[in-house]
Image 1: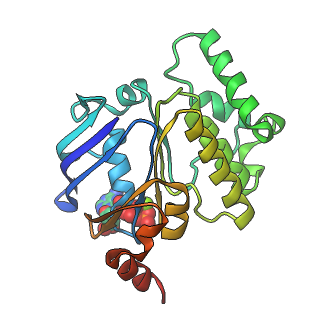
Image 2: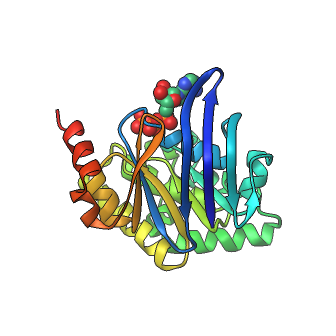
Length: 236
Ligand SMILES: Nc1ncnc2c1ncn2[C@@H]1O[C@H](COP(=O)(O)OP(=O)(O)OP(=O)(O)O)[C@@H](O)[C@H]1O
Ligand SMILES: [Mg+2]
């Protein structure tokens, strides 16, 4: 579904990704793990087309994405749920969802997608008339994911979907991602909590200072030396 080969990325003259290679197969949930500044968001932005300075190959279903602008990548079915939710706080929940459908061709298709997304997320449906900024952090994350689903993605990228959430909200978001995965959506998400990553994702890549230093499968990966070192680093 998605393949990165030797991807490097730059903000101006500053290089932030070095030779990143990874893949996400159709139907997988894959996690990008790493501490602050390790390059997790940069990988997702490179895939979504939000980073100008990228070299190497980024292929989606065999097609090279690098020359395509972000909106065309969204049109190919790559949805992106931005970090810290980035909702429009003064707009209603429903209006926020509709902002996610700007690439969907017909009003009929938008209505159908809205019905499907609201049926999947009863809370989002119930709060549809409220300003998004008035919702709790967990509720806002559900709205952000709902908005990401409005472009009818086959691959959904999520930047730290659990950031700042209560344990209960973490469970709700994890349950939602698990449900979307069972429905056939392919997911790639970022997260600093390695245990949470491997409880949800089948595979995970560990990033350190802009490089992939480890790839692991399932909870057993937490016992591998690279992960143990990372967990040790993360403990103050
Ligand atoms: N707009 C920017 N301009 C310049 N440098 C940036 C910019 N955004 C990020 N960086 C740098 O790129 C590197 C990787 O950042 P990135 O946001 O990808 O990390 P991250 O793993 O997502 O971190 P976090 O966990 O804090 O979200 C960092 O050194 C960061 O300082
Ligand atoms: Mg980030």
